[in-house]
Image 1 (tube, one colour):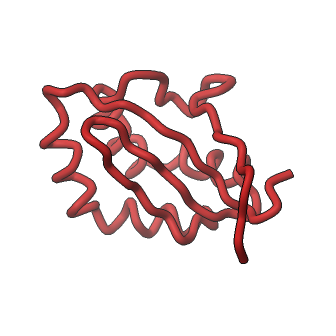
Image 2 (cartoon, rainbow, N blue to C red):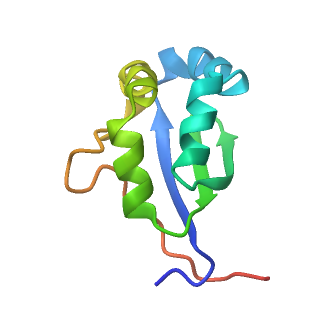
Length: 108
């Protein structure tokens, strides 16, 4: 169990998509923001190091949140664009679309 209700993972973005990916996340669609909030996702941050990105958010029920995101028309439109930019799986209908990182330290 994740003691702090945090969920984190990392992905590489294809070099040729880097600029567009960053631009999309600097100006996210309002309906995407609303859907993530509706799903119970909060304190969501994305950090960049070259073409590697680190994602971290808090959520009380990650499975339920991912279910809401997977059924969201707005999120499916967004993911159709960004999924082509990542190196790895982005399909929330797959058994393990994102490999979560284990939390080994948390200072409250």
